[in-house]
Length: 247
Image (cartoon, rainbow, N blue to C red; front, top):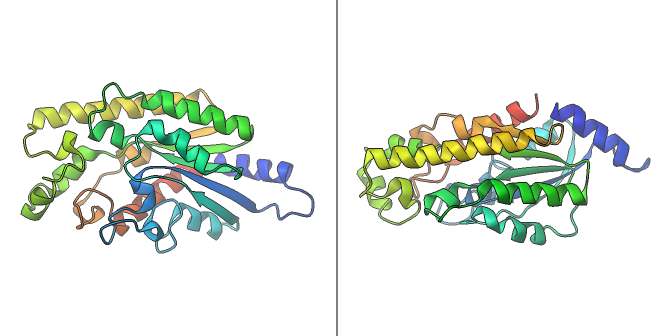
């Protein structure tokens, strides 16, 4: 259970004079974790699911339980999974107690040739464990991008926006339903691999199935690009991730 593991970690690692409720939170990932296009074109980190302060984010939920959270969000928009090493470099000097990882959509959206999403995440987990053997990691699944298409395909405005290659493997107007289904199967396969990877690190890594399986509704998707989560969608991601990982 993540709560028990974190409590044991903080009590064991904090100096006697330090507040045992102090928690270092690191966020690795892509544009979703920067609130990209949530309310306007560009970054809106205050609305991101992990550390945003204008929604009930994962960080806000931690603070509501009594933790004093110091966070560092080094997620990068458009980041494929092999950029995780760059993100760890950006986080140098910050030793996390808890890490949230949400990555993989860009590997699949742009049909990267044989993306090694699982291998890249495994490498990252090992580097985090080298830095802090007692670190706790929450690993989120890749969202169901096919559901984004289904929720907005009746909107002509969205069909027009999708001509911009945000995620051509799912949103290109030239795709057939069969091709979209095949690409969603690839996401499902990656999520199955992430779930299996988490099982290799019992007591350290928790795979959050709800991120990849939570139904996506029209109000969850930003009107800015009809692709990234809206503030409502970001809040739903935060709730799903927190409730499952904090059990």
